[in-house]
Image 1 (cartoon, protein in one colour):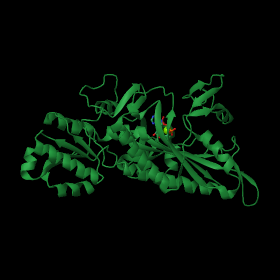
Image 2 (tube, rainbow, N blue to C red; image 1 turned 120 degrees about the vertical axis):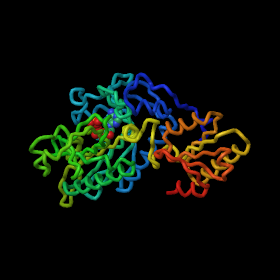
Image 3 (cartoon, protein in one colour; image 1 turned 90 degrees about the horizontal axis):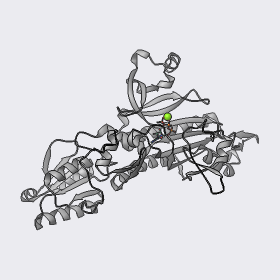
Image 4 (cartoon, helix red, strand yellow; image 1 turned 30 degrees about the vertical axis):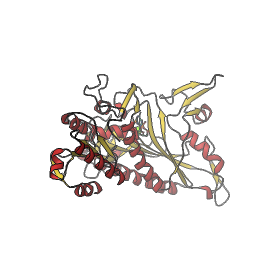
Length: 416
Ligand code: ATP
Ligand code: MG
């Protein structure tokens, strides 16, 4: 992508109506646009980051046999009445709307109900189970506060997986497999070391649910972390009994701010019973399907990763989610420099390397500042000076120093 053609621009002023660092930086860099509080548009560079995150999530869900689908946002009130989740007293984040004839509809805040109903016609016998489904889809929640930028949206992206099992043991097996897949996701996103499996309230169906909490000052949660054991408990289960049950010691627990980046639940028959999702077992008896639900927040992750990695100069993206690997700076307008930079741009693209090519007629300082603000992992400069030495200047976004390298050496760096 040539910067001269990219319709977004960076801006120097910090948006006055944003208090969250993630939103300030993402707006300054032209990654997102604020529509209103808690509602953001992902612009071209932001969308690339979001989609790279989704792709990693998708690969890990596919690897454990997840079947991707996509539900509608518009929700039929009837199924939510059947599970007693339509009432605003029961679920306080609903956005609701009406058809012209007055029929009430909702905008999906989560999708257990439609998923359960959609499964019903396909499940008859034990042979039809188990399975996993998932989607990466827009959720709507009328959140009371929306001051955390993309970390808490009123419209946001969620990956939600659902598991369907015949027995508790089979459910446990699926649950554990998904838990392991989540650990891989956060590792691949570069936040594995700061992300901890956290015991949270299980509601009525199991002693615990599990959250994945990433240590982050901008997070909205407080967790109690046993760093040595690598597990945490959240505020709502911080009791002497839970600490004892988990074999933890209060003295070893550190209170830290964190952001919830994932949440996994055992649902048992909470949805399958009211929506009548049953199967016939091996001996011909009717049983209720046992379910689980498993969320990840890709748009929140864009914010969390921004908060964790950004420095005083701007965004910093890990290689595998960056909108481009290389920020190619052309310094000068001489024919020779232009030809060399154009040719490097072609070469890199032909090798499948994503490049943001700063081909604008702008000052060096401006180009370097934008390279930093945009957070692209590798900055490569082509100038009269580099041409004279027959080399390129390379600098990693996370390093202070630049080095003169040959094209071959550059390609090696980019491949590693
Ligand atoms: P929270 O406790 O932060 O309100 P939740 O427990 O209601 O979240 P879930 O319903 O379990 O969240 O949603 C699954 C995941 O979706 C969460 O772990 C989080 O990463 C993400 N998520 C939830 N609410 C939002 C939101 N308003 N904006 C962005 N991401 C969200
Ligand atoms: Mg939660």
